[in-house]
Image (cartoon, rainbow, N blue to C red; front, side, top):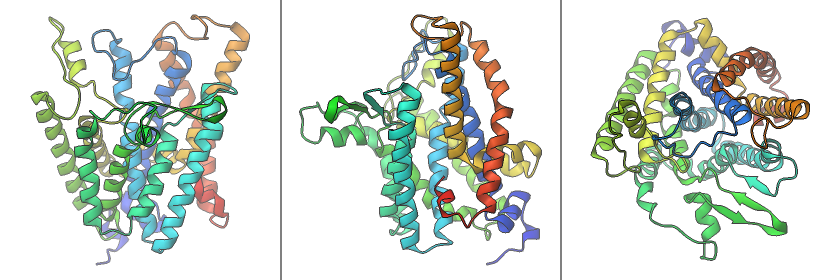
Length: 393
């Protein structure tokens, strides 16, 4: 059934006119802006080790809360990548969609290995960090192989992976075991020896993320113009609340889905920190229930806010996420190397600020300068559809 644009809310109406859905871009933009905070911590507060998961007994509460907030980034972004892939498929053939996903995935994987890995962790490093961009690229390629399946099957596969992959946690292979490299890529965060003295660190084992991207693709039809915004809001409110309730029940049971939480005597704050200290690498069932449940409710909020300025500003960051990702990491490394050249090491062997408050100052100060180039590229990408390679960025 077709719906006249006048019957839709502002985000959906704009999607009819431009092909983009503002609430999706705004939610994607929100997690990109949150991600900047964590990368600033890695730039200016690197001398303070942050375990994964964080130790609720010793972590600074402020730093812990910031880390908890940025935990939303990868799950929400990868789920929205699945949604975007579905929406792309509605305007293209199955073969065209598959070709796009494979090419975009390969671009992301190459970007991680040949630029981001060296840039972010040092020049001529022998270590290749297979992080979130690599993970998204692999997930897109796997999704390309899956999209010919019925959506119900994709939803079932995604649910099975997300809910069941923790059953595989006891499987731990050693470097001399058969299939070690494949398993380290899929589910075991580890180090893989490569030729010429190189090593690869599988920071983001991809199996659970394949489940997340499949679920995102399966719910893609909820964003079609024929779905009324109030219906979409009800669905996401229901799924968000359900996921958070499931998280609370499973976490209180202290059984399946993540490591146990614990009570810190006479310290309610650190007990709460333990309750929410979850495994991200690879993401546990409880980690995904919490983050994706919050993500669903954030989408509800953004849909209800409509076209308010804050939503429009976030949508700019979400309209060119890869550009923002590469630019902000480049800027941060240039700033770091410039500071190190001027003042040398201030904390051990690295240049770093002594107070986390300075990380927050940098955070506030960089959002606006990064907004303007991102807005420029977003406009370029929207206006120059004749430049084919832009769609891969």
